Length: 114
Image 1: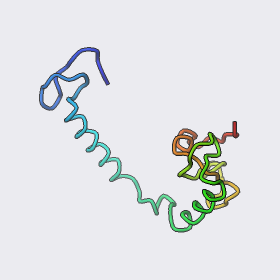
Image 2: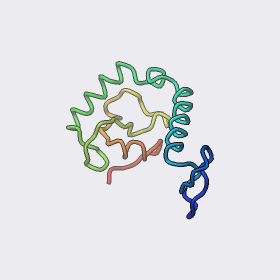
Image 3: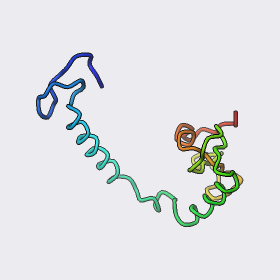
Image 4: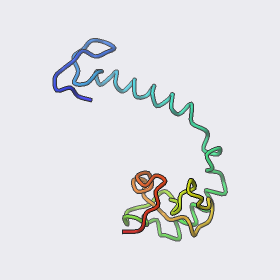
């Protein structure tokens, strides 16, 4: 976050555009990300097991590694009907290839292809 004028870094006091100089901001971000990752369950506990990997590859190959939503390069698989809304987890009929941006921007919402 920039304030429009230099301010002293909260850690070392060097003038910076934000609340920390670039060196200390990077260290602060790494520490924050480490805390978040430590609290997050493992990929297996979140449902990304070997069965998911098999279905994921089938869907990506079926859709020719092309995002269903925007037509870009796909590396992830997206649930059409979100799990939170009762969509089946491993049913290929409920899965489409998706680029990372489209997958993360949809969240739990159901969206029709444009």
